[in-house]
Length: 395
Image 1 (cartoon, helix red, strand yellow):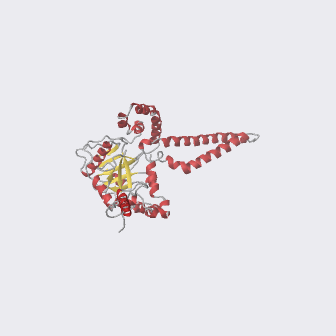
Image 2 (cartoon, rainbow, N blue to C red; image 1 turned 135 degrees about the vertical axis):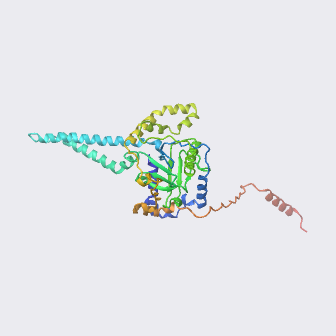
Image 3 (cartoon, rainbow, N blue to C red; image 1 turned 90 degrees about the horizontal axis):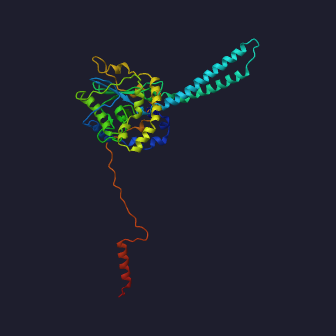
């Protein structure tokens, strides 16, 4: 579920970028962004994107100044890691039970009057103990961090918009970047006019110039959709809520944090309803045939919800906007641990924005070379004149 967010955070603090001299001197895609491009995207995000604003959800809180929704780029794919992790954990538990069983038999044989050691029990205890220890050590070192992308972590990634403080709060686990507070002004959106209309999920972006943390921030919001108008309507709802207030906006349906079963099965079919209605009969039949796979993933999804806990905001963010309560400070580089700060400083060149405007492209001069054996009309005329001059008598 948090795979993309985890990979992005690992990319931001990757040591390879800071130690590779070629990476520092290379022209990466992020370095080709100019301040004029950033300003253009920010201005586009302030414009009207849809005439029918609608929040598709899930929305967990909605008031006069708070809008809290589900975030995350791969919520609909949640479940597969949970199934695989459950199988590995089950093997470890079975190995532990088998080791304890044969250890009991071994102790019973030693405790007898003749104190005879049962060689069969001793072999099985040694075998299962060694095998289970190897499984457990490998899982704790390599597998647990993958399991925590879906299990034994926060139940959902959250994004909270506070229109009174003009801030956006992102709730993520520490291994995905943690809880951060970002400014509303300076935000760009994939659903803004001129944005990435082909995106499947609404995404919001803050450049390194806006965050003041030497790296950009990005968050994906809500459900997956193949209809760009739904994504534009969702962004228009958020934009109008933050800039104008909740007046005139349709009240969204509030979703509970309790892990109901339907909350695990419905995400597997997000984005397929519009595609299903406009697809051919063969594709519809194929979707029906593979629907049991969606149900299996849904069971894993529900299992992951049951083995996670409800995310909780810090007190200063929960009380932000209330009378007499302080405004949360924006997250800065100093809020990170010292070793993370060093990594971010060393990789800052990857996300830097060039000042000024993008230089105009130079026109490329195209020169067509004449094919071998083909002479132009001018060449033919010049050769004919030279022949005539050679045939004339000299005086």
